Image 1 (cartoon, rainbow, N blue to C red):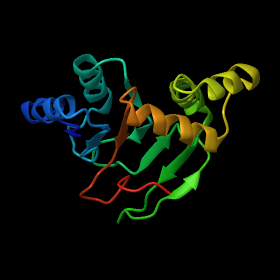
Image 2 (cartoon, rainbow, N blue to C red):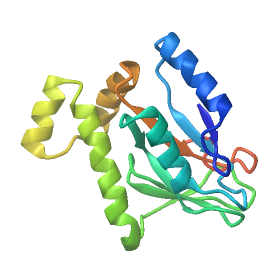
Image 3 (cartoon, one colour):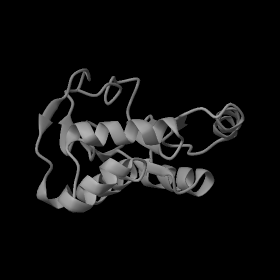
Length: 166
């Protein structure tokens, strides 16, 4: 479900959601136009959560938004993507210390959501305190298929930034 970063949840978002509910369709949200001068990812995310519930879980967020947008923090893979001006394939870099807390909190939400849908994964989560990347992917796939989570991604489709993950 595509949501405009400067406009937030709109009537068209509501209409698409009606189809999601009617046809029991696994879905995710993509907040687009992060590069717009009036983009507000946090407000848009809050609107999505308020309207569609606590199953909405952000996977990533823009480090800088607006016309200077070029960086996404990915909490699933615990890495940061920095895009060249022309977009395309980003450079992977470490998440800065100033963002580690927020990224780790988001990562923990994803791990918990993954573990909640499989007893084996839940046991591993309690025993080890985390899940490896394959276990996390398995659990999130189950959660997404069962509509237990609605992940949120961000991008600028126009600038080809964040439209594909590596």
